[in-house]
Length: 212
Image (cartoon, rainbow, N blue to C red; front, side):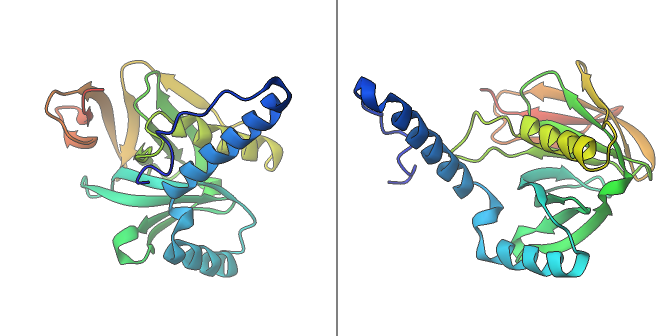
């Protein structure tokens, strides 16, 4: 089944199996999410092992496919890997080759919008911010991946680094620094737009979203 059983309606369980029924549904949803995650790719598993040996990280905080605005003002599909040591930008079409690594120590705050657009900015002390649209995947089109990323990073900074990671929730767009230059990132839903993408605008860039 192409959707891995996502469209199958679960039967109502007898009262004695209610708790077990909830557990199996949770495990099924987690399994479906995994199929939309680069963690299931053999090439991704290989590169994470290589990076763990090289950079000596202990924990993966987040991984996922993203639409990314890079330092040359171009948009590309990439994989994002965040560990307790670095943020990696990976190229899925080149066996997840590392294109960029940023020490997580340089991250000093996060910005998200107040909407459900799945855009997040990781601000760094070097003013080379990381701006991404988190792709939810076909099997989890309503997943809140921003909440997952923000929650895991904030927990890491609080628990391991003993400091709070500021999170700014913006109602009209994000302020980021790209190549050391300030940019404003707005969000717009556009009829006829087939996929989320960043486009240049007067003050910076606009994240164009397809109609829901």
